[in-house]
Length: 103
Image 1 (cartoon, rainbow, N blue to C red):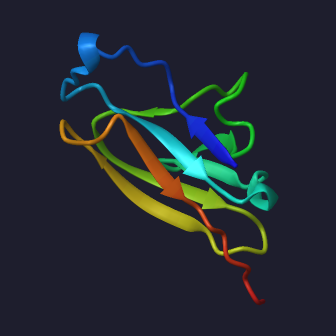
Image 2: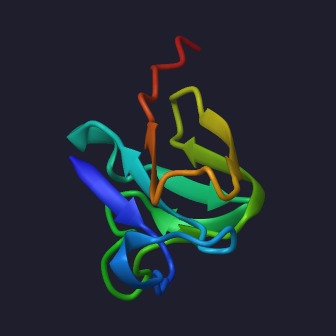
Image 3: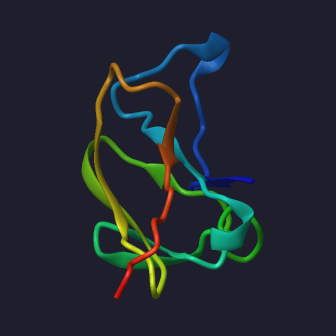
C-alpha cells in the first residue's frame, strides 16, 4: 500500500523546478500498518492510511530540513530527517517498516 501526502503545490511549466518548489512526501507501509500515526516536524498529520485523502489531503515539504516520524503502539517508530533543496526530487519516498517491539 502506498500513501501520498502533501499540501497543494504548483510546479513551474515543463517540469522545471525552482529551489522553493518543495517535494511531495510519500510513505510506504504494509497494509497492517495503515493505522500508524504520521508526524512531520513534531506535528500530527493523521493516520498513514488517511493521509492523501480528504480531509487531510496530500503533504508537501517546503525547502529546509524536516523530521518525519511514523508511530504505532507496540512497534518501533520510524524516524527520518528529510532535507529539501533545489536538488531534491519532486517526490520523496519513505519506506516505513514498523518492526514489532518485543516488550
